[in-house]
Image 1 (cartoon, rainbow, N blue to C red):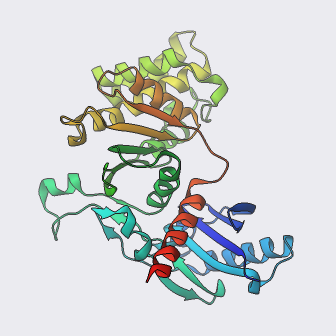
Image 2 (image 1 turned 180 degrees about the horizontal axis):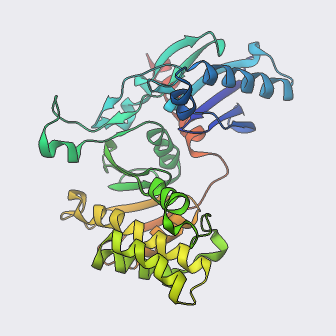
Length: 338
């Protein structure tokens, strides 16, 4: 009896495979392999073989066979040119109700004999070729659109919303009140923090490690934000070193200061966004429970320009897995109506 579903979300450096039995998450397998691995090796085979091993592991562990698997849904960087099956981006705007029907179907023999459904990424509309200032409004994403569907199950639609998904790349995804995925904006904030922490003169001051939730210091974070807003990011970065050399600020405070300084640019991006023009009802939902999410929430709730801000802590299920399952089920519902 085919009653299990597998969802696979692959990113730049990691892959997660979830086994579902109906609406219950049964098991999770993770691997430190992703698009970056394929780029370094110049070959996608290592990713395909890794996922095959992950599937074998999860099925053996749960005493099931291929015949028990009803469906497999993949999302994220698995659909890019360095993934296991390249799928073109959809072009925003796209109605949420139309997205399930846009999933691609393909077999990847190196992974499994089953047909796999692939969730396409999304790109903002732009001319071709992109010229001048048009590039500022262009953006792409693979994987975050699936996470948004996971969040929509929790928060619904009916209100213009910016979903904030912090990570190595911070993503800002706009969904309109009438259920249209309008596009996204991306910053490199997470990678910038990593680069500064590990590969600059500030590495010693920051002890080459990232801030933990326990050492988060709102006051220091807010000061970093203010200094970057008033004197620029590069000056604020040097002030990180001066704090270490000439003040009694502890390591947690210094790391919090850096976080605030880097997030200043992201807050400025939101402030300058046309989404907020005459739209006092716009809500912002920040997904996650990391210190970055906490800092972002604290900065926005302290700013009168952002009257509706919510922090969505990590739920019981991974957002990408939840969104992939939702998309597949909606697709099947539509197929059944025909």
